[in-house]
Image (cartoon, rainbow, N blue to C red; front, side):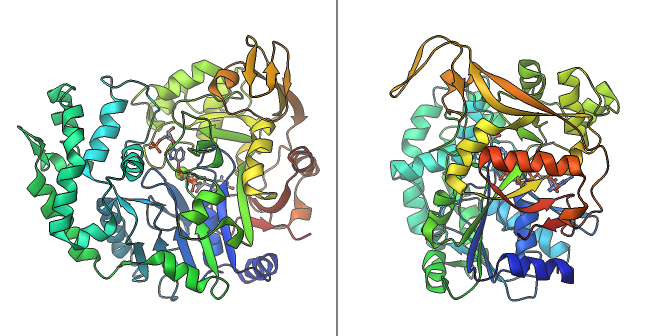
Length: 507
Ligand code: GDP
Ligand code: IMO
Ligand code: MG
């Protein structure tokens, strides 16, 4: 549970609220896990509504770290009668859920109150395979996905050939739908090198070769057998969660857990370098059967004064620019390799690329799902102004403590467009045009040169502080600047990964 003082302040912050949500104003990995766990003490029901096992939500509790990909991050309040839900909008991978449930059991968390939407679409071996084939050298248009099958699952959903969690309960129907689902995919996969396909299907996420068939690519009976087994294990967890949530709206305290971030939204993000679901509050609410207007308060997280991105796509404020993008995109770079190569870098680097590495090391910015180094850059106000249009003004700042010892803080206040004449609807961009609100078009973003305002750092550690008045003056100045420039209101300031390392701002 939260310490008494924090719990009191949280109750005050949420006074009169029945349904709240935690989403991210950037490209993910901003601390949604921490804050879903945090608000979990308040909530009766905690629900995921978007994404799938591409998410990696970390919770630090009493020196122990938990990473959840699919199970809602409120699960750690066991035996308190809280309900956890994986909603209809989630790409549901039963293998990941089984694994996470077994880890929870092993660590003594016995929460049985977890329910899966019967309507969530299933991640099947073909989705994981296609995702990985497309991302391999054989594929075109690399996005830098997490390889969790997310794109192909949502593609099938919209192509109206997807299989749902409910199909796990009906093996005969499951098999019929599976055969239909695979028909076109086999034709497509036959265009690729068989060796690559066989190799991918040996991966542990794809049943270690169990689902491979030399002649037809997929061993249908092996897949049916495995997924029928999931049906048996999960039969008491599968239900109509959307209706359940609608019935409890306004009665129980509901907490919605966002995945990814607004800038990765399929509808509003930096397309095509996005995920395949709508990560905004609208997508999240829809993914649990609700409407965004049903949500009384949405907390949009801002990692500041640096931010991160994983995978391909523009990142105008990236420290070290293309050099960093290339380095982080090189397959196989690990935290250990960076440490061996660069040693312990401090935050006083004058070289921007090295500063980016130093920030990554200081913030432990390595993917919770893939282990990839996260690209690091300065806080980008044009993107923040764009993003808060979706999640509204209430924000949580996270990871500020990472920059405690940085002498100089840069904040991007606008971009200068440096490209050729370009039409964006009725707007015409020319060389030298100033852009205040980001335009998430890759033809624009590649020519956006950040204009920075520089601040002195606060240069003192803040992790032990629990009251907004105690924060260093210089940090307060920076936060006020961001609030004013992006039109946001600070509700919480996070000063460390632990539940209690949190400052509630009541004003
Ligand atoms: P999510 O995907 O949004 O849940 O975020 P991730 O779990 O992928 O990454 C956020 C990381 O930052 C995790 O390791 C958290 O434990 C950690 N974290 C969260 N808030 C803070 C904070 O205020 N300060 C520090 N130093 N770490 C934090
Ligand atoms: P959480 O919830 C950061 C990124 C991938 C890639 C793009 C598409 O932990 O914040 P996908 O596998 O979804 O098809 O990959 O989206 N991505 C994330 N980046 N945090 C995440 O989740 C992400 N989920 C997907 O790196 O660029
Ligand atoms: Mg994450």
